[in-house]
Length: 529
Image (cartoon, rainbow, N blue to C red; front, top):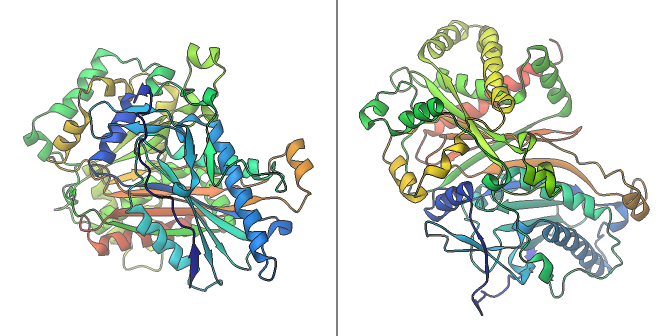
């Protein structure tokens, strides 16, 4: 497989010190510290955009002109998103200091942010090569310099095909996964609004930022909503964090079987997909049992580890789930400034912890052993009752976070931490807490927006769509030994990715977890239930 690749812009020099806009917020500083200490590298969402038939570049005499139109159209759609969302057009000064700041940018050079790879021909190995490409790029840090924003995109197109795969990557000090989901959805909206015959929004692939947009950055999370805490909850939470190491080492739920290793940092990665019929069956059976896919992912992955790790290595487990705060954010600031959090990019998330105690894990192991000598999927069959009861409990813990709003959330304590870099260094000296880290982006709407503007620009059947999405993250050294990341496109496939650090967990264990999760999801999503 061969490709042509556009040259990147030469390394930029700082001509004059950029003007500071505001300091990073508490969560933004925490993420910047992770990045600075090389405890996390990259996150990405890969979306397959189907090109309207009238825009597909066909090999032949007109190829150069057609591919140029495609590139201009896609980059104009991206440029509109950048102009709409301030965090996509600011730099970051003093990344390695305790209190970095966001700074103004006069322009965004797409030669540093949007890379095209045109593959000469479709290959049977393309999907396999895509997995390798994602894995390799998860190892490459998304830099957060003063001179440019912390995002990049790789656009893949195979000659003679009607799609582009757009890999969107970002630095977490600026935005979160829901932001990149919004990035792709807004690209789709813009593509269906643009007239490809109009001039490009960029000059020599450089987007100039209007003066009035250079300082329009919103406040950070804690400036957008409050996080009230009670004394009792704060005392209990702080004790769990500050208790002596001897007590932490005796924690029956810690993940000492997966040591924390800052170096070497090498990502291992897999993903698999389930068709829409299987997904809809899974959703139906989850509703029947009053749980959600997130609760099910947490439970199945934990049960897999329970059956594959001995009691000597792991008596119990603790895991975490990322929760999008946007649906529960409310404040006078948001209302008075007419800000819709659901359409806002930023770091607007928290996490919820889940415990799987010794009694539960022991029961899982006993029942799994009973089913090992039976027919295929027998382990899943004997665990069925436990799977659903545990999934319901996990779902309840997530729902409680939403029901309680922002009260007694860990984001209420993060502001009391004076130095996130020191905190992270201390964590690396302690036993790993979490076995799993689950972050579910939910569903991307890949259909053309139903607006008069869009319909006026493109005829029905000649519109852009998103046909699939893949969510992938590099593991945070201090966090879960395994990352589980599902995402689906409405009416299409569900993709589930798993990542972990090489050398932290045994390859046989990782391969077994991936195989279990896929086979158990297919079993539960079968049509005959």
